[in-house]
Image (cartoon, rainbow, N blue to C red; front, side):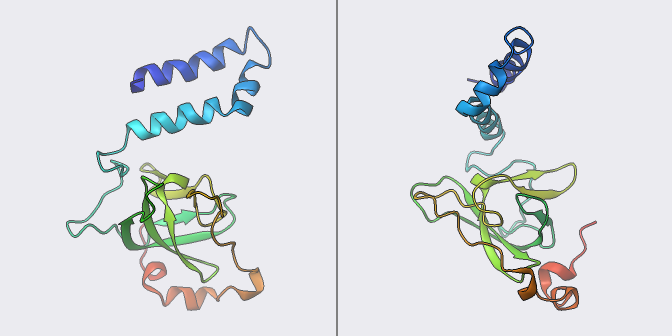
Length: 167
């Protein structure tokens, strides 16, 4: 199914709900809407499954300091510049280095995050709260540290990922 057909399918579900109340919520619960949205997103990836609007440097790295938001939007991180293919044979994604305000440094999976070129931000949309991990079995990666263990803002600003302002 191409992008146009996928968008028509999504639109059709929303419009059909006007006539059959509860249809949309049923399709959301079945996972159909999420699958259609993920399919549409997949169609916008490059051949090697990288988001086409997310710039990559000549050396294969990404820009350090791009804002990353946790799944609930309450924890912020910054990209470190690192990027590599996921080593799991069960995943088509890429791992991107993120230094979280919790002090943790993780490589989060493209299968669980979305890059928005209009805001130049990455947002975790699935998997773990800050790990975006989707490799089976679903371990959902590492949980954020308790707030009392987070480094100070001054300590964060001494790191490469946090000292670079991208805005």
